[in-house]
Length: 200
Image 1 (cartoon, rainbow, N blue to C red):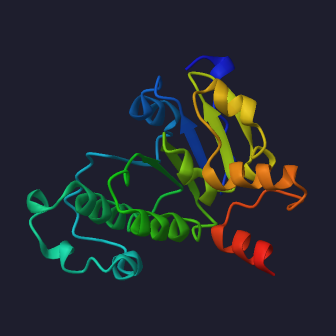
Image 2 (cartoon, rainbow, N blue to C red):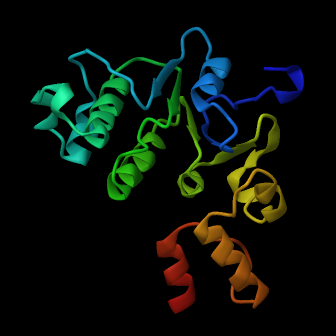
């Protein structure tokens, strides 16, 4: 990775990197990986018997932990793998499309759970624009850094998103349209908060 394309990750942060389809996400993950980082990818397989009991209970996958890994669906394998990854002692965890086949409900549970690791650095690399709304820090990457800021500061950067081939995620886009009609004064990314704001 060239100096101009260097990705700077804030320590002890919760950061999403949204990549265009031109980017090899696994290659990017390996490029930003430090020596002691833990990286998990879509097809990762961890033979460890250890796992994070809290997330296993949260996802209700206790029975899956006892199954032959090869008999599980891709989404089930990914839930098992993330629960094993979180049992390790790491400073930085790089998640590269490692929950891409998990159901929307369980993915939301995982992303909210990862946010609790406020003394760790979590880096989530994806091409799914809707996933970014769970993160505090945000990087938009299309073989170079287009945006690198707090997520709350980039939710109106529609031009930059389009440059990388994305529309804004649904909630920020809806917020912008409501702001245009003076129904909101700032973007809202939580559906629950949006409903509360509009129906109060």
